[in-house]
Amino acid sequence: MKTLVLSLALLLGANRAFAQMPAADEAAIRKVVQQMTANYTDHKFSDMAVYTTPDVSWVNIVGMWWRGRADVQLAHQRIFDSIFTGVSFKPGDVTVRSITPDVAVVNLYCAVGAYYPPDGVNRGTNKMGDDQDLLTLVMVKKKGKWLLTAGQNTVVSATAAANDPVAVKR
View 1 (cartoon, rainbow, N blue to C red):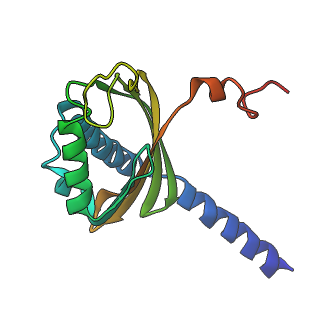
View 2: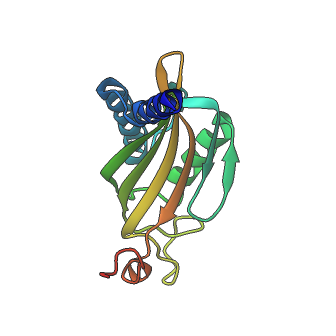
């Protein structure tokens, strides 16, 4: 019985250890997020290799799924050179959650200005943006360095958020 209790205590303690992230790792992850959001702000993605894994993948707000650093970088650059020309991106709240010592999930809110798909031209009925996006990022630690390995972007619907079943008072 002592062995069982001790084993359970060790297991629970190990689980808590993995859930807590060292401050240096969280700071390193936040720095990667800053590098990524700097690209969104300056519309230049030439340094993606600094903060992404070679096999990075990205799902954008309309469900396009890009795989591999070359395609993720190319797609971001082309979209920011067309429909997002002159569009503002302002990063907001960031949360970092440790999954394992080498894997973390980051959620980031970002305010996005108005844009006009599919080509950046205002046709009177194609305005999008002027809203909040919520990005989910998967970070991995490789050779002591935190890197983005997957990302997904969702537009936050203000109408839907007003009816969030979790946010409604019980």
